[in-house]
Image 1 (cartoon, rainbow, N blue to C red):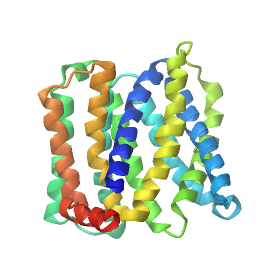
Image 2 (cartoon, one colour):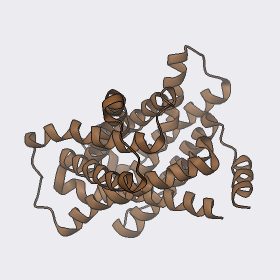
Image 3 (cartoon, helix red, strand yellow):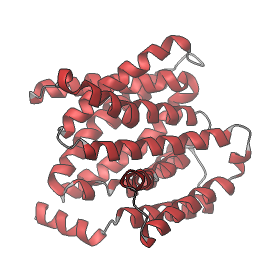
Image 4 (cartoon, rainbow, N blue to C red):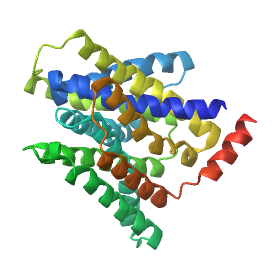
Length: 295
């Protein structure tokens, strides 16, 4: 039961990240929000690393951390922060679920392999799901929202690149990847801060949202995720991807009063169905692993 609670907690936390971005982005703008998030996460993980006595190995792994920090944190956080100035938390959380689809595409391209019929159907469903979300929402017909949707898709694609790259560099520990990549992302984003200024004077709620994004949604969430990977394996831990949209839509509706139309529900189901096909996720296999570990 403990693994199930961790899985649900992680999905709830990562689903809340879109709520916090939606709160903070209109005031801080994309660059300041993304930089604040990774900086708080890096500081928090440094404290945890000292407590766990885990060295960062920056001298030998700095190039690896830069690549991972760019594609797993700096760029996707920047793109999502940009999109959060216009799009709902619900929509962003659902589009985020396409990350495994992008990972499958990049892995196949690198391996020069054709997609199986199952994977091809999953990719098609992912495209259809996003089209349902975007094409049937009257709010998204406003000028500029199309770019925000593309930014979300770009962020999800970055996660796909990062997953493929991380698998190729499996020799580095999971916590070291998180810790080092957050510092790398901070260094990548800091030089851009002087080029922009916050849109408005941030309120206390905005600063708390940034703190929550860094400490809760990046720092603590990584620790929960790594525990799940250790207990259940990486493939089973990735099942959190299917739960994040549920919480993203829930938090957006409860706290921001975002409407949940039939196209939102249908689009989310189609995107998740496509992701399940592409990843080969099996609820029965996950259940067996949970029972085996917790029982």
